[in-house]
Image (tube, rainbow, N blue to C red; front, top):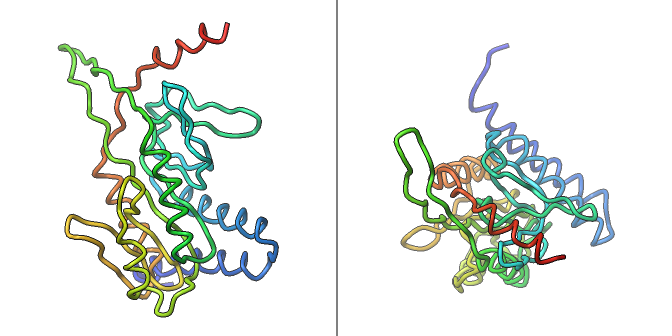
Amino acid sequence: MKWSLKDVLAAVHDDVQHKLGAVRNSFKHPGTLGDASESVWLEVLQTYLPRRYSVARAHVVDSKDNFSDQIDVVIFDRQYTPFIFQFAGKSIVPAEAVYAVFEAKQTVDASQIAYAEKKIASVRALHRTSLKIPYAAGKYGAKKPGPVIGGLLTLESEWKPAMGARLRKALSTGGTGGLDIGCIAAHGYFKRGKRGYTFSDGNKPATDFLFSLISELQKLATVPMIDVSAYARWLSASE
């Protein structure tokens, strides 16, 4: 068998689209369909992202006792994060550990974009601590927390053409919940840059999206050093 990188990369997209399509054809109840779509995206990102990143459905919490809404897909650091909470079957991730958050839906329309923006804003509003980083000769200065990437993941679009003017108009609101990146697996992906959004309707958009997301994650480097004591003080507060 002769190997081809083109075929390998195309297979990644085909795998994503096949799984999302199977979910759509198998589940008719909206709640079940939504949960299954989230599970597909979680599995895809867990499979293809570098191991330094963990991926889960979770709430995000800060050291001031503020919680985000539940987020479909949270990409976070596990190597340098001393604790991830599990409570009543739910994952709770400290705000300092978060690299990116996504909502996962079957289709995209203006209401889904607005909903995703609200969820993303609930994470970006959280407080994040940062301590100086010790090393052999002293300490590096505290790292300024980087931006939290926010996005939307779907299979289909309610608009025709999927990557046309109506999508562009819906994305133009910006603000604290503005979407940085998104994938409409059957049609294309979009990404926000300094000069606005760029849109790609290439042949294998899920693979293009994964490469673009990894590139954006690489730019964030490593999360800041969390101030564990800021969380630990809530132990005495509960007594």
